[in-house]
Length: 321
Image 1 (tube, helix red, strand yellow):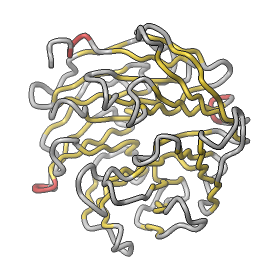
Image 2 (image 1 turned 90 degrees about the vertical axis):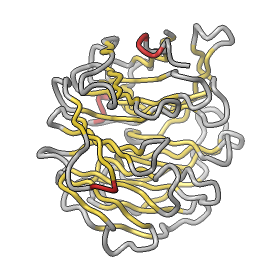
Image 3 (image 1 turned 180 degrees about the horizontal axis):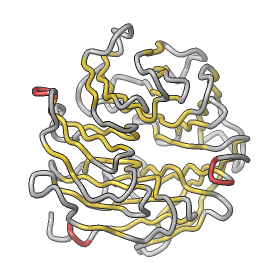
Image 4 (image 1 turned 90 degrees about the horizontal axis):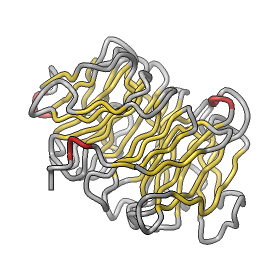
């Protein structure tokens, strides 16, 4: 395991580069995101894989709660902030600690989620906000392309489908999971009351576009199949508190990871059991950020409010090739 300490910053999001398996970025905030500014850390694993070095940082005047890489340009990063703005950073043009190349200001409250489309010809990203809306953006335009109004409470997470064009999912404090066609922004194409509590996270299976996972304040992870959307196909149990993020493995169809407010990172295989394969306890505060390395099999990164960023391979996946 490799570890990095974000001094006086609390980690909210970590994302590996889709282009370089050694590079990743962390979005962080001062004072637990309640006040102060935010910092993006551009980090790189050392050649031996045992250390992490800081390549550059960029600062913003408010907390940074999520970050995503462009899927077409290895120099482009998008982040979402507590002041309701989205920042686009071009690391090829910006100096260390320099300002973003573009700032998009339409949301009225905190942005808690940003995601870049995985479909190659869709040069789009998405933002989800506590103002209860989701917006689609073209990075070269100052104004959003569309605004999606369907949730009655703050939207925690919105993510593009891995393989279905023009499609994204969103989850909210209203307990609903909604599926949207970006060309039909008046109403979602599907909607379900996914949890009794607030739904904090959603992700699409990387190997089957019909499968999604949600995690919520009730501590449950539910797996959904769009072909039979009425009830979850399974429910994963064991988290003591809220599930902050779930993410399917890009390498194994039924494997996913989660982090949460019980300070743990858990590895699951929903085809094998509704209990975790492994529970990893290497944080001493809320664990917030999570990402699989698409370019290096079974490698994960997580980050949390204890200012620690870890890169590691779970023991339970050591036999999976």
